[in-house]
Image (tube, protein in one colour):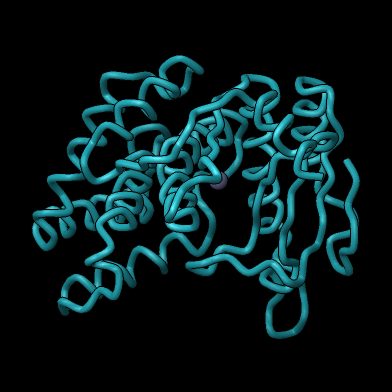
Length: 262
Ligand SMILES: [Zn+2]
């Protein structure tokens, strides 16, 4: 593992070191973890996994994990690094399918964004399951405050995202997936159920769409390469998730495209 550009996260805990070493052996790749202070992703996300020809490449914004005194929340940043590196395990070892949007698309950016939703919705459930099986925590610390906020938004009928059906379904499926693929207890379990109940009551149309995705996951085991691929294909058949210019490709095809772009 190589850490690049960090000022506070200098030596990770043994648990993370061992976990990454295992993934490096499985994928025959070195994990390169870069502190990217300019990382700017929607919805407060501050870490990312990107396909790379050589490394398991993870970018993370160290600043997002500092408290007001400038101390780092080591467990939290390490959890997110573990999360992103696990995407590498799925891409390079398991060869989970990837996508590209044909350059001829007249709506490239939107199609790309929607494809990221579909792939992340399924893949994050699998990542969470693998982390859980490897004795990591079940969710990032901010999960509880985020979900409490969303419950409150629904209660007062003011959710900025409620008309963004894809985002709403995406959120629902991730919470539902957490309950179904790990063994939540305590406040995490209570709040997650509260969120799902509230969602069902408050957003009936969005809920109808979420049921369709849940049904796909019931019928296809997304923790296998084939099941994941089939789930993606079935999801893209649904009206809500149609992406006209998407092509499902293999990891090696995606890496070829990367080298052509260089
Ligand atoms: Zn992820």
